[in-house]
Amino acid sequence: MHALDSFDRAILRILQKDNTTPQRDIGAAVNLSAPSVQRRIRRMEEDGVIIANVAQVNPEAVGLPLTIFVEVELVSETLEEIDRAKERFNAAPEVQQCYYVTGEADFVLVVVVESMAAYEDFTRRSFFQSGNVKKFRTFVSMDPVKRGSTVEIKG
Image (cartoon, rainbow, N blue to C red; front, side, top):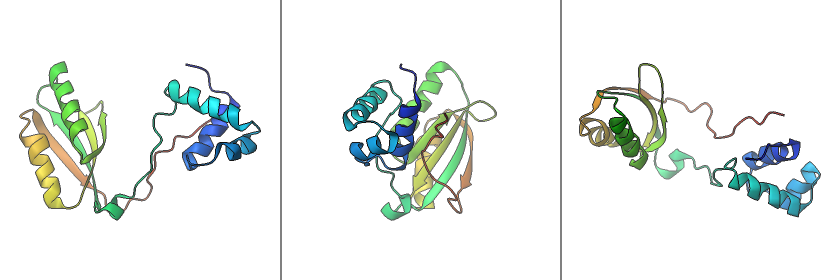
């Protein structure tokens, strides 16, 4: 992986705000040519610095008004069981984010659903039927104060 220089960091700041910004505009903002910006972006994609170019969708606008945070504790924490849980959570369309964590819980999930009934269905499929979930705690978001996927680019 290449070390990020000040030009790369400036490019990343712009792309995180709007990844549809034309490369000539990025170049003008950071004092590089459009082809140089293109090469740097391609290199950062190849190096895994840029992992996706996606649209951030408002869940409420597509009929998913409930955001639920879930702490999940497994009964058995063998490598096989942890891997199975990772696969199960990764495959569930309701799970927007999944983190394998330290502490009392084994996983923290961010789940988006259209209703509490849909969440109940998700828990039945993902927790009760697995046979390896000891307990789970649910936190329903009342107000999404801040949403985003930007990372602070220092330097």
